Length: 348
Image 1 (tube, rainbow, N blue to C red):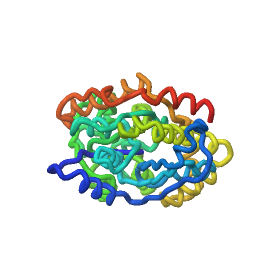
Image 2: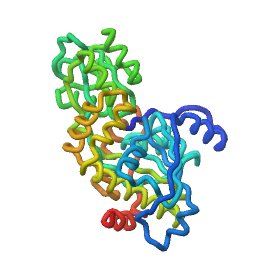
Image 3: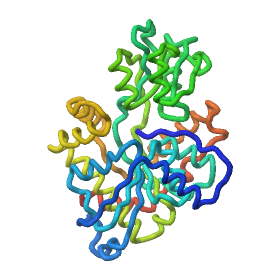
Image 4: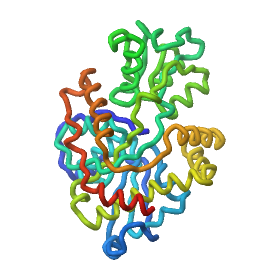
């Protein structure tokens, strides 16, 4: 999953910002040299194309494509791994990336900060598991309703804050009914371990770590979160026939890779996940299968339903006072590549 925090600071030169953001990337790589799914007429042009593509956390998409045997492209892909989708969008805005992927939260914050030089062109539909509220080992809190008046850690301006707010509402509580403590995922794990907070709204490895140490899940965001992870592309890439064709091909490859891995290569991919996330391969395999059972991963063109769900996310953060004013999320979505992508997905 990809998560967000707001970028603050004085304006800096675009080149300096681009360099600083790329320095944040925790890993990078490149691929190229194989056959693509795009039209043959674009093949010569694609050979001269380079796409700079972001990922969050670790090279999961690169591993997915390698496992499926779809990583060799007729164009060059330069991958950069960032600590969050928000950092990807900052790099995209600064011209240091061509393509980003995030949850449906960072785009609203990025658009609130400045006029975006990018647009959402596609969506990865993936699972919403490991998005939970956990109570510490031995805690008497067994439900969300039991959080009233207690200290609850959360990661601000992320999926964790969003689903925590929705869970509180479902339990008949308001945000002000808890002592909300904004923390990073790492700080949250330490605070729960020490007993300085009663519960923690978190995601991913933090859920794995805390539950392994005896924490209990008392609420889940699985049925609250959309499962939508937008792909954002720079407006220059969208307007460039060769680069947009390469992007469409890459998105179709990712979609096909999901299907190939589900169809007999789950264990190989789980092995790569386990090595990157420091968990047993059997656990990674179980999590992958559970995730694919909940929401089979796929890439889809933009749709009104996805925009509506993202608008709900943005409006929630506005109501919580995290966003300064309402953001019209439809302003940064586009169907400019939808026709090409639909054709490529059908052919892959």
